Every structure is written in structure tokens, then in C-alpha cells.
Length: 213
Image 1 (cartoon, rainbow, N blue to C red):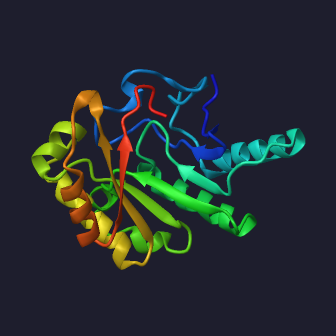
Image 2 (spheres, rainbow, N blue to C red):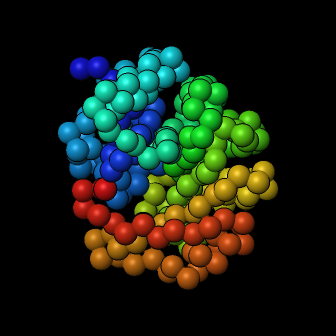
């Protein structure tokens, strides 16, 4: 089966770049199912380039035009893995979209581990390409974060906060998010919002939904 690199959901276009992730969040949708509204997001191969993504993106736009469908003026990098792990592809695709569809807003949903992974601050490289980052804060402290997010390296919570601050310092809109209500579990939303604001970010509590969307 061919990779689904670009898919649609609720009137928006999403880009799915990888199966890999530096977290194994206990509430992640991919633990329970392999598709989103019938679109299989588990990739059969990670061996693809930016042109493959761009081709699928343009195919969706052409089909929408032929069928009279209108999508939101926003593209979201969000799939079954951490999109920033395909940083160069993400950057190339974002550049293409900005050059050919300049009014399109680009958002990246991320766990905020990219600077740790690449051992440098990559945020400045995305200025002018990414309009907003949505970063999973997922808790009020490292213990809660580790329990919910199951990161694959130590000190992940601090890396997330540093990434959020790096986005804010670069002048890129950034939203820190938490998942609220997972199997009856409640997060201290006031404390998480306080942390988010101290890092220069907006705050969003995402209600846990069983099917993930």
C-alpha cells in the first residue's frame, strides 16, 4: 500500500512525515488504530523525499478544485510520528507551499524535542516558513510529563520548555498544549497555563477524545 503523506480531516490538509517519535505517549491515537477516518497513516516506508509530499499535496488540491471542495487556508504537519524528525523535508515542503500558496498558514504540531535531537536551535531556520508551533507540554512537571509522554531520553520536559521559549524568542507564534481528561485523569490547567505564559506561549487544553479527533 502506498504511503499516505498528505491527508484531510475536518476541512484541513495535514502532512504525515514519519512513524518515528521520541515519545510513546500513553494517550496517542496510534496505539489503538492505524487510520484516521479511513486514511491509513502508518507509513510502509520512510524512504521518500519532499517532492513525494508536494506531489500528494498538489493532487489533493487539484481533486478539491475539480470536486468543488474548499479546505481551510491552513496546512498542519501532524501525523503518526514526530514531524520534526524529518526536518529537512518539512523545511522544503514548507518553502514550496509558501512560494506557491503564500496565503497559506503553516502549523507544526510537535513534541518539542527537535533541538535536543539535532543538537542545535533549529527554530530560526523555520522563521518565515512556519507560522505557528503547537508544542505538547503535557504536564506541570517532569514527573507528570514522563508518566504521560514516556520520552525516550532523560530531561525531555526541560527540552520541551526550552523549545517553546526558543519559538517565542524567534517571534513565531507558539501554543503549549496539554491533553485533559485522559481516562478520567485531570491536569492542573492553571499551573500549565502559568508555565506556558512564562515561556511566551499561548495555552490550549485539548480534551481527550477516544478516537483522537
